[in-house]
Image 1 (tube, rainbow over the protein chains, first blue to last red):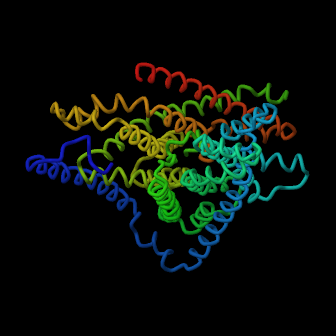
Image 2: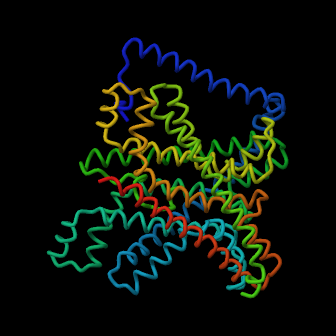
Image 3: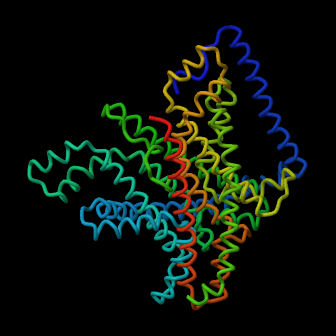
Length: 285
Length: 216
């Protein structure tokens, strides 16, 4: 909101009132924080011993770096595979043949409706029974992420394809392209462009979800933090540090999504479909 | 298959906890989320900043990390609760950020003329929001809230890692006891979540139709 419509531009008295309310509001927020800080201090959470490892243990940063690398590996593999799966499922979902479309709808709805944690456990526990060899934790995580995010990306791409003006399809048919060619050469490239902000936002979701790898013993960032806690005994400080790493990376990605969206609105004149407006269903979180 | 049917009571117990986690966290997230959305559109800068900071920080943190911070952080400010309540709190705190975004975009989607008209007849910020804007925004808020709710339903599964006996823990307990029926047990709990998700999607579609019925 650039211009406030919910309240008037204040006159002198209104400005004074807002100033007073600002001071009171700020003081109230600070009071809550101060209260929490006092309790934390009373429980020894501000003791130097709790922060000492951050300054004296270079090993700590090396471990966290290893964890972060594993997190990023899982995220990159999963995103690449999910993009491929997503395009395939989107094609199937948009197919005119019912024998293709209906099963694909069922697959998409299944993977979107089941918790990711259940998919991870299912792959981790069922794979050895079916195939006979163990599935490494990394791949159980990557495959589960691929199945879930592939289904979500398929819906994002479908929404993108449906948002392309009908004239594009008609023009493609008019010059003699088949339906498959139209989809592949005309609609998909435009859909991906329109949906780029939503796809980048999905990357944030995916990156956050890699933290579920800790339940099957995959040493990603969060689990590494947990292992360090066992030795250093400062859970609050370490988990805050881990949270900070996630927040920095994800803020950059969210910022990128916002930037791309703003640029599209600027250049194309057509309002792009904002990530929040897309019916990506459960993919929001 | 027999192992699943024989242990239906374990599943029922687990999924009952899943449902109550979902419903309690929904109430918490709706209250907190609406409060934060109100702060974000208010004329008072510090409250706006605080609301924006909350949404930004929480949205970019994995729910698992929120769980760890709640479980290890709250006892340090002398809030010691059973794990079930910690789980409700963590889910509420996380989901509130998404509720706030849904409410805020709903508020922004109401035609500016509505708020201008209510201001011109002398309504205050609170009256404008409460009597004019929020009732109209509600119809636009329901569809995104439906996806937030279903995501919350699935997210309750993370509580299984924090000693809450819900759907996933029921599944894991049965798998440990009946190693020969792993596939059937996993399929049964997947079915449990699917049924819950489909039922809530259906209920939300009814609600959506109800709130949009009176409007053009």
